[in-house]
Structure formats: C-alpha cells, structure tokens
Amino acid sequence: MKKPLRCRLHLHTWKTEHNEEGQRYQRCLGCGTTRDKLTLNNFSGT
Image 1 (cartoon, rainbow, N blue to C red):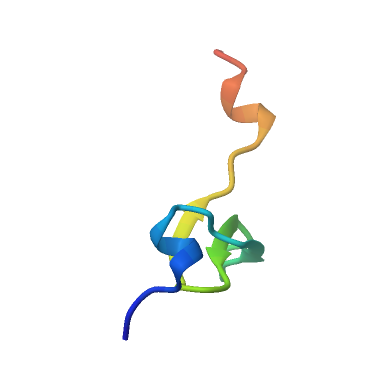
Image 2 (spheres, rainbow, N blue to C red):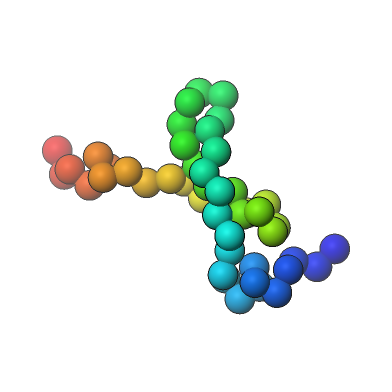
C-alpha cells in the first residue's frame, strides 16, 4: 500500500498519543509514522 501524498511530501497530520509508560509521542494519522514528543524540559541544558 502506498503512503498518502501528504505523507510522501512530509506534510504529516500528527496526533499526540501516550505509550504504556505514560510518555507522549506523535503518530501520523495517514501513514502511522511516529516521532518523539519533545518538551521544553529537554532543552534545559542541566
């Protein structure tokens, strides 16, 4: 099955979800690609 055109153009439609450990991540509604949900705490530098 081919990916939707929007996904092939890297214009994903992201939905925030949670895994079993309670961590947030994002999943594309069109193709199912996942990415980590970054928070501002990750950039504290300490």
